[in-house]
Structures are given as C-alpha cells and as structure tokens.
Image 1 (spheres, rainbow, N blue to C red):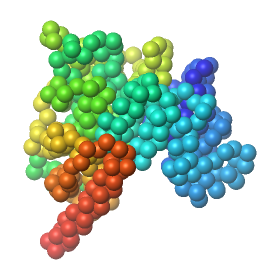
Image 2 (tube, rainbow, N blue to C red; image 1 turned 90 degrees about the horizontal axis):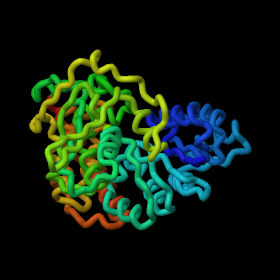
Image 3 (tube, helix red, strand yellow; image 1 turned 30 degrees about the vertical axis):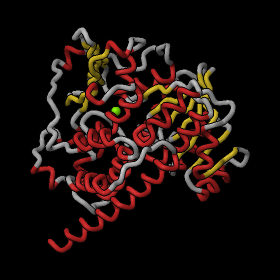
Length: 390
Ligand code: MG
C-alpha cells in the first residue's frame, strides 16, 4: 500500500488524483490533504478519504474547518503545507499547488526523501537546479504529471540519453490558435479562458492561450530530462492526441497518444512502473481521423523566445520569467492589462533583472519576490497610460 500526501487537493489535478485513487482503494492510503481555500470541497474530501492531517492556506479557514472536524489535525500556512509534504509515514507527495507557492513544500518533500508526482511545474521552473540535485542526493523519484513530460517519460523508458536527438513537446495552441497577432490585442479574459481540449484551472488556461504554459514546460523538460536547449522543440498540434514525442539518433520517433485526460499521466505517476487498467476512454483513431501539426508562430507567441532567452541567461532568470508571468496573468484576468501586455510585462521585467546563480532557495525566492514587485510596477505604468488614452 502506497501512502500519499496531496498538495492542492481541490484543484483540477488534485480532484482527478482522488478520482484515480478512489478506483484503487486497495493500493493507496491518503494520509494528508492540503488545499488553498475551497473549504467546502475539502470537507467532502476529508469525509471520503479520512486523512490524518489537513493543511489549508490561512488560519481563518483552518478555524472554520476545525468546527466540523474537531478530532482532525488541521494546520495552516506554509508551515502547515511543509508539514503535510514531509510527514514521516508518507511515501509519495502529489505536488499540485498552482504556481510559486508550490515550490517550498515540494523542495522540503524532496529533501525529506519523498517520491514526487509533480504537477507544479513552477517548482522546476524556479529552482530546477536545486530540486534535481536534492532529488539525486536523496534518491528521490520525480514522476511527471504534466501530460507532455509524462509522454516523454513513457517514450524514453530506460533508453540512454545519448540516443536522443530531440524531444518534441506538443502544444494545443490554446484558445487563440486561429487569431492573428493583431487580433490578440482585443481579446478578453473570458475569451482566453475557453480552452479547446483540456479542462484546467484559470492560470494554466491563460498560460495555454499565451503559450507560456509551453514555455514553462520547456524549462521543466530541461531540468527533468537533463537535455541541452537545442534538443528541446515545440510543435503545435491542435487535437492534443499526441502528448509529446522523442526523436532518436537513428531518425525514428516514438510518440505517446491518448484522448486528452489528465487521469492518464496522474495514474501513470501513481502506478509507475506498473499500469492501471482502463484509466482512459478508448481512443478511436478512425473517428478522430486527422492529426495536424504546425510550427509555433514566434512573433505571435512571444513566450517561447522569452523562455529560450531565460534559459540561456540561466540562474535566476527562469524564476523571474515565471514570477512576472504570474503577476501579469493575474492583472489580465482582473482586466488591468490587455492580453499582449502579458508578454510586455514579462519581457520588461526580465530586462530589468540582474541574473545571479540561483543556487539556493533563498536566492530564488528573493529573485521571485523582486520580479513580482517589478512586474507590478510595470503593470501600474501600463494601466496608467491606458487610462489617459481613454
Ligand atoms: Mg502540460
């Protein structure tokens, strides 16, 4: 029986994880749950999975929850998250907190020797060097839950890295695939939140529309698979049936296919190296009939060149890109800036950053905090100008 802590249990990945687990009650025991602020759903999950410990974002929610569950250990804040991530009797931590708040608990879990089912890509984007070296030191398996990385992981199996020519991440192209660069200026948050294939949280759906999600995934792949930048490619594949591919030195390509459903990569991370039966709906290729591909338009999707710039700059720069993006996406959702301003905020924040090594968590957190502040300043300047125009 594998014991689990689930960080981010009420989000899209967390809910799907619990659904997979509920079909395999004999194989897993949920020891702990952590959620941000969907206390109602968290209470339902507590009743269904009977964890020993629960953590919530703030003390107020913890107090509310304690009224309903007086005998349960209920923690709060980052301390609570870290405790849930490092419990003695837990084998694996499902890291599925959205964005930068997922970094510290994921890092502490790796340090505590827990295997990680990793959905919080920001942990590797911000601190890939630190997390991967800590994982190697503690013999920790990091199993990707991101569909693209799970696909590559499945295509690679135990093949040797020297045989890989390239990995190719597929991207759906998000909500605005058919739109021109010009048309992107007028799109609204509601437009951007309509994702064609995947049912995901708000932040990642906007990231998908800007293609920044793919940028972050390039950084994630860079650390996870230890490949140089030149060996990481991106291709637009609107049907999201091929989840990613590996091209080998002999020219052969292995791809992983399924209907788009996060339960696939989640189940594989939980069951690895085995596979569970009937996780996904059977795929009828004749019915799908056509798979299409195109190169990403780098002028339209500026997140990709920005990502490659950040990786080339190295050190704290990917972390700065991530932090600026988080702030910019939030400002876009709240209607404070336009869609294409997201790129501008990231680019201007990166321009203002002086890169350092990014060798300690403190340094990375500091760079992230600086970038958030800087991005906020840039957003203020942008919205001030917009007001004058009106
Ligand atoms: Mg993905």
